[in-house]
Amino acid sequence: MKAKLDAIIQRDQAEYLEQLLTQNDPLLAEMEAYAAEHKVPIADREVARFLEITARAAGARKVLEIGMAIGYSVVHLARGVGAEGTIVTIEPNEEMIRAASGYLKRAGVLDRVEIERGKALEVMPTLEETFDLLFIDAVKEEYSRYLDLGLSRLRAGGVVIVDNLLWGGRVATGDTESSTVALREFNRYFLNHPQLLAEVLPVGDGLGYAVKL
Image (cartoon, rainbow, N blue to C red):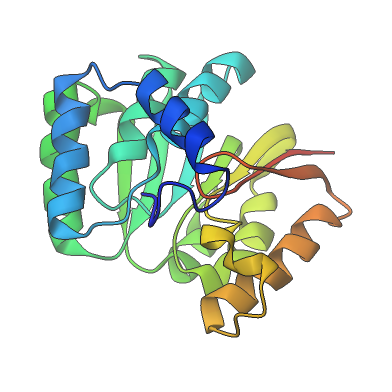
C-alpha cells in the first residue's frame, strides 16, 4: 500500500486515479481495511488489478508469488488464472497464512492456491513446476535472488512483475537505507538482465514488468 498518495506522481493526478479506481468488491475492501489497520503491506489497488489483467491477458495457468501476506494479490491472481489455474505462493508468517486462508476461502479461490510455508530463498529451490507468471513482493534486499531462482522455473515468454521498485520515490534520491540501496541495484539488474525484456512502470509504488526471452 502507498506510504503517501503523491509519492510517485503529482498529487492531483494521484487523487484523480484514486477516485477513478473505486473498490466495489466488499471482501477486497475488507482486506484493504484490515491491512491498513494492522499495518500489513499489500499491493496497491491498481497493482492488484494489473496482476489480474495480466494473468488473464497472458492466459497464465501457473503463477508463482513471492510474499503472500493476507492474500490480497493472490485473490486477484487466482481470479485471473481461472478455475483451471494454480497459484503457488510462499509465506513464512503463520499469522499471515491463517488470515489469508480465511480470505481465500471466502473469495472462493482457496482450491486453486498452494501455500508454501517458509522463507522464499529456501522454498524456491525445491519447486519443480514451470510457471507462466512470476510476482515478487517480499524482502527487498532479496529481490535479485528471487529473480534468479524464479527465472529458472519460468517458461520462455513468461511474465515477471515486481512491486515497489520506486519505493516511494526514494530510489531516485540519495537515501542510503538498506532496502533503498538494494532496490536501486535491483532496478539496474532487472532492466539489463540478458534473459528479460524489462521496464519499470510508474504504477502503484513502481512496478517492474518484463517478459522472459
